[in-house]
Amino acid sequence: MSKNLEKYNHIFMTNFKKSEEELSELKYRKLPAWDSVGHMDLIADLEEAFDISMETPDMLGFSSYEKGKEILRKYGVEM
Image (cartoon, rainbow, N blue to C red; front, side):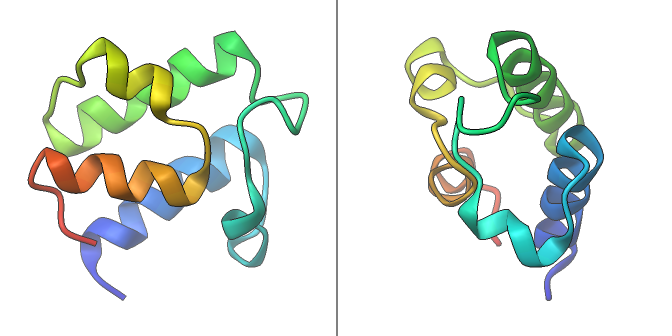
């Protein structure tokens, strides 16, 4: 597992109190912690961890754990 993927997973596990095995199932608004406030906290943590600044359409399109990896690749973050 790459360092970036480890970091990405850690952010999700910390923010949403989920195990690594549960991550691939995570989708925005499908669990109580991933509401609009949880979403902005997640985005802020990811931006800080990967030293990026996401554009608004990407923040809004960040709808799942899997989609997030795709979006981060646009910013040069390889998983």
